[in-house]
Image (tube, rainbow, N blue to C red; front, side):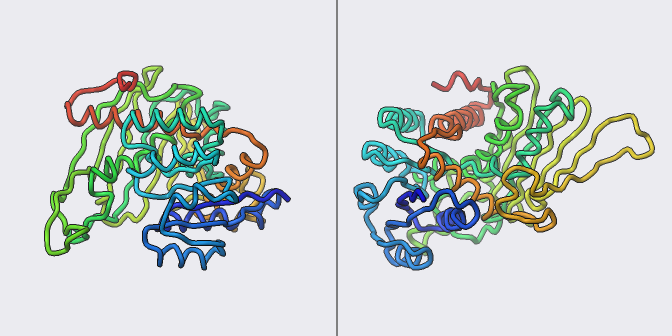
Length: 380
C-alpha cells in the first residue's frame, strides 16, 4: 500500500474540511493512504488540537518545519492568501508536491513565480476548486458535453454566504486587502469562475471579457487587532460580473458575503437551446433538468438524483438515497491528489490553472475600478 506523507500548514476552519477529506480516503478507496506527519500554525494550541484530532505525528508553530521535514511528500497550504506564494515556492524548491487554497496568489507577479517554481521543480500541484469534484456537477458536465441541452445560450452562477451579513461581526483577515487581496470575489466567486470553465469550455471557451461591479456594504467593522477601534473594510462584500465567453455568448457571475439567510448558497443554471440544467449546493445530490422535447402534457422540470452508477459517488454511498455531503466531496478531491502523487500523474486543476482563475479575478477588479469592460487577455 502506497503511503503519502502529509504536511499541513494552517490549522483553521478550512484545514479541518481538508482533513475530513484526507482522513476518509483510505477507508473509501483503499489504493493509497495518507500519513499525517506534521501540522503547523502560528497558534500552537490550534496546531496541537488538530494534531490530536487527526493523529499527526508532530505539531509546530513554524511552517518551515513542514517544508524541511523529510517524511513530508505533500504540503497542504490552507493559510491566508498573502502567505500562499512564499510557502508554495519554498515547498516546490524543496521537492514537495503542493495543494494550495484559492485564490492562489495576490497578483500576477506572485502567480507567475508560483507557476515557474512548480514547473522547474517538476512537482505535482492542485488548487482547491473542490466543487468540480462533486459527482452531481460531474454529471451535469457530461450532459452538457453530450448535447442533452443543445448549444449553450447563457450561464448564471452565484455563491451567496452570510458570514459577514451582521454589521457587528468583527473584521477577519479576509476583510483586509493586505491579507486577502479581495473579499467575496476571491473567497466565493473564484469557485463560480472555475465551475463556469469546467462546465462550458468545451462549447463556449473560457471567459474573454468582464464587466464587473463591486460594493462594500459595511465600510467599517471592529478591528481584528484592537477591538476598541474600528477598521476600514477594503475588500468587497458583493461582486456582480457580466462576462462574455470566447465564442461570444454572455453570462452572469456573482457572489456576496453579506447575503442574509444564506449560509452557503452556491448554484448555477446552464441554459441551452434545448433545455436547462440547474444545481444548488443545498440540494447537492440533485439536478433539476428541463428538456424541450415537444411533450406538452408532461412538460416541466424533472429531478435527477445521482446514484452509485455515477462516477465517484459509489466510493461514499452504497445506495442512491444515501446522498453525499461536502466532506465526501473533499474526500474525492483529496483522493485525486494522493493518487496523482502516488502514480506521478499531473492534475488539470493545478497551479497553472489557478493562475488563470486569478487572471479573471484581476480583470474583474480592474473593471470594477475603471468602470469599464476589461479583456482577460489584457491582464499580463
